[in-house]
Length: 306
Image (cartoon, helix red, strand yellow):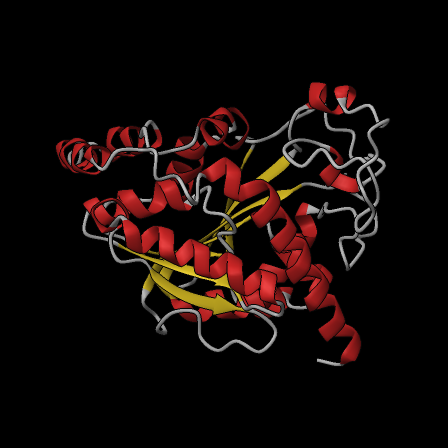
């Protein structure tokens, strides 16, 4: 990767840190010591009782009291039970989640897998700044502080110079959750697909949730506004060796016009009021964007051929 690519990676690293440290830490409760440890033992009992019905067990985890209220409020936009069921999550799986950020999905995946005999690889950002290193460290310490809840999460890294994200052929499922646009901006999207393919077992699933651009246009290869065309995602996956299997409208939002002044980040949960890198504009009216809600998203499932 040349100097321009390296600079882009640093930019997305910094952008991720702002999102994780300034927004996500408060929302997901990375310092949430106010939730009692008794929740951990309750989870074990509820999850174990639901093993005969994986969907019921997953719903019990999504309803877990350890999840921050702000995170649970976003379930109406992210549909975690329906999405994970569509991707085929089952008890005992080995799952790799790329760039978990502040841990919105970790609070679901880690407890579910820990209590059903599975394994989670949290493929975190490869730090290119002190802020990114701090975010990864806070994430790690939170998980280690509650082993009964989260189990032993395997924390690895993905970035411009990272190596394998998990042992080759070890994963049943890999998840790209609203971060493909960041990798496109940093010039490492193809690397992400390659690493996912290598980590998956033959027959394993790649699940993708991503902001969906208006179909039929020319894709900005840097995804500057945060939106990506579904056909472009399918092409990248195909070139990496994946077979497209299904698409779902689980997280579609027809109110999203995709023409917002500060890209997808104008919408909730970010509600950006000024260009990236500039101070917030208190005069910018966010009400119309709150009325739209979160972005229109594609939900895709690919499979590594057997």
